[in-house]
Image (tube, rainbow, N blue to C red; front, side, top):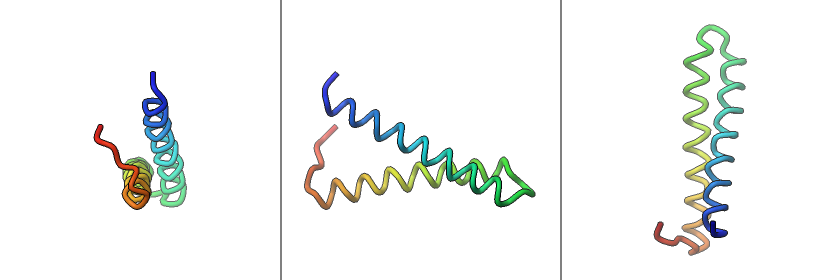
Amino acid sequence: MTTQDIFHRLRVGLSLVVGFVSGKLLAGHFQHHPSEFFIGGFLLGVIFTQGLYWVIETLSGDRTSD
């Protein structure tokens, strides 16, 4: 396993953690439909984190073909 593989796995793991936390926060805040808000918050958290990584890589010029 190379360093690039390790960083890729860490990125995916962090995206899942951010998605879980944002989903739990939205589900706790909007009590009337917690499962729907958890799913929406989870997806938004994952998409936001991956988008943030994409922006950082694009700006730094460190984008490599996978």
